[in-house]
Length: 286
Image 1 (tube, rainbow, N blue to C red):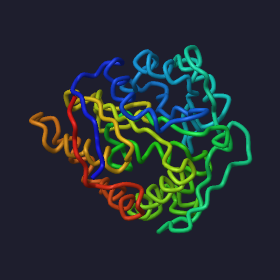
Image 2: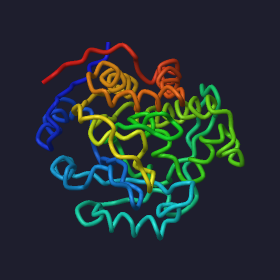
Image 3: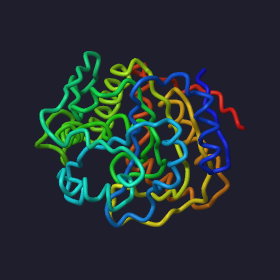
């Protein structure tokens, strides 16, 4: 049974405390994967919140370009937005797919896709700290650790490949469940690449039904819940889902509707089936 550490206190200090429980699993040059926020989005977590932990780790904030219109779909615009949002001011930043070609990770046991196209600069890193803002998502139902591993690490082309379930031209028209399973396949390739030298932290704050990738996002529908940390991306996402369902907050209905209407937990089920992690976990509250 995987361990998931949890605190209701959402502070940089508590996040460091959680990280220190798991930090021995990270080594060498550390990539920090987080969501830098689309231009106009009001809900993404700001650099100041993460700064104490990122300074402690001395890692590099990594991102990849998007596959849809916006201010992050070209390297030039994305680099400017990273500056505008303050990430470049405070941290080393690496837009991993700024230049082609992509790195291709094989997925021999993938159910839907057998290859994952990621930013080639992933090769620079020995381990990864995944800092996820847990919230809803217009297509995935929810966004958490598994989305960061898959869509987050994928290059612009790779994002379209995952969305299209292996057919880039079907980026917005592929069977929805095949897209969700493709995310699980892609996530498995990243965990394999790093040989599980990854620490996951999910922050349940500013929880909207929409993702930080939305320039026009709905305001949060629930009160903040807390911070979770684990070595298991399946367990940490499942724990967040369970905390939403078990909450007494009436606003949870909107988030649950978003998750269920998109069949969002299928990504968790498919990831567990691939052996990325376990849906069985022990929640340890600090």
